[in-house]
Length: 498
Image 1 (tube, rainbow, N blue to C red):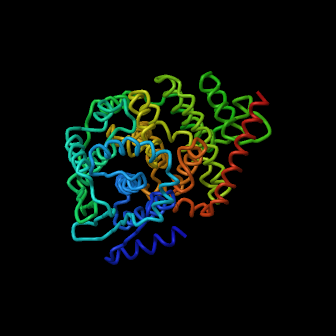
Image 2 (tube, rainbow, N blue to C red; image 1 turned 90 degrees about the vertical axis):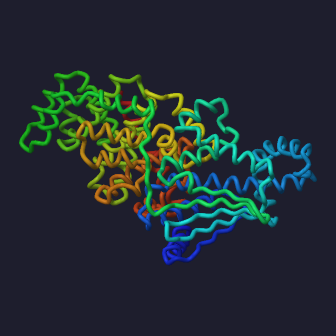
């Protein structure tokens, strides 16, 4: 239903009509609906790469508009005069705890009130404009604070500066506006595209998405350090490259390959481990390299050689990141099973390898800037931002997805892996030639994220749900539960055979 309605509105927008949405509160349904509409409008205007930035900024604006209306309701409920300094100070202290503890009451009461938020989308000669208007004026203190925050934002070079200044306060008074200014500046939309006005009983925030986007390069110490880390990563060892070449030869014997592998004990152990985790069998553990090569075949051996080499290089250079590898193991299993069960069997092994390697960049990111990344993760969760990737890009100048793609490119990995690593959070941005494999990796990663409460069903891209016939929420949940059971069963078999 959401998909159909937002498609109709996107078509009206394309025809030059003004699209207007009206709501009382920013509940999950409204945000999901808006996400879908913005995605389609941006895609139709060849600007889908701005999706995360625009949605994050727009949600921040909407939350502020609803918060302003909620504040008026609270003051009215408690018979407080906003324009009496003493009562305003006391009311604001109480409101901060009230808005957190009484969300359901606020939503219910706003629906009964005249307080509304209206959103307008309109094409113009310079691009298109998004306007968010709430029917309450700004208090003089609010106007002053907005001006101060905008000036503060202009003093920051990047989000790392914000972290250093405000890291003792995750929610940070006014942090949302600071974030918005930095997003607009670094995305190329431009901070001058944002205007906040209050007059005639309304407060209006307008955002111009210009026809021409001019992103500027972000250069800071953290980014330089990360790029140096990627440059210094060793290439695959020559014996691995020779094995990969051999595995591609149609006339190579299984014995020749297995004999070469066992000469490298670390590689042999890695091949055995990955062969078992891949789920090529379900009732028996693979105990020898010869059996592994025989059972999984040449194509899959090539895949496992690539994966094991990548892991060995990363593990040798950095501290153990067991949690990330465990996540990748699960994502790889899910990606393979989704492909097998949803009509993409030919991509099953490619999906598995993409799942295994999709978070390469996160290891480098955590190794170079762990405290900042942890703060970004907390901030993302606390403000219910859809993904931390967009914040990583603003804070550091690149996301873990971009870092991972650079590593995959350095190692001359296949294009489908590079594309899957780069877009495992943004499948709609991927090259059409690799859209299916990227979608498999994205969905597998998202399912893992749902299990750790990082995502939920409404956050999944509708186009991806449609690809795998999972538009129905119950069907989606049932399929997810099946994958979880299969993964746990497979792990139990492998563990019991150890």
